Image (cartoon, rainbow, N blue to C red; front, side, top):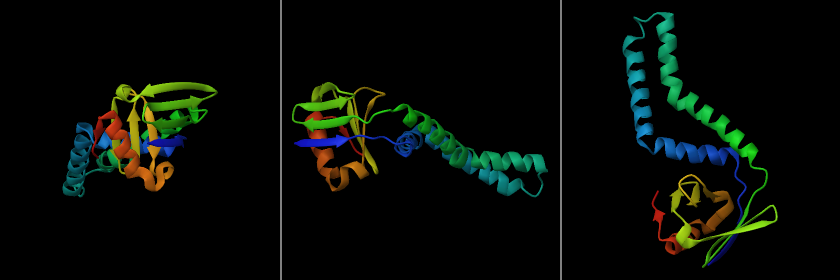
Length: 160
């Protein structure tokens, strides 16, 4: 096993990552239930509502499917702008070798906390909040092989 990638993380990549975790959690379930309830309320009470109430119904219906993703994208844009240089990550049988700004760092496979496979990316977590995002665009047709190799080395892979 030997892979070498430059992990340039964009605002869209960070947005997708956040959306996977928001809507794949209990908060996401609550968001969907709230939106469905607001939509049902809006449909059932629209004719009897004043303009102000209609405004709040529309706002409630747009809160999670439109406004929240937009705010998450704005936050992702700020995070991506703070990333000044893309790390070069080499994965081999010993672990991950990271090179950035002329400095190198190593992370052995037993230090990897989790490997998560999403429809558009694979994330290798160093700890609960930091990791490396390998998008489908970067991995190309080697995504499945990359995931299987990394998950077998770390023994911490998770399904979609």
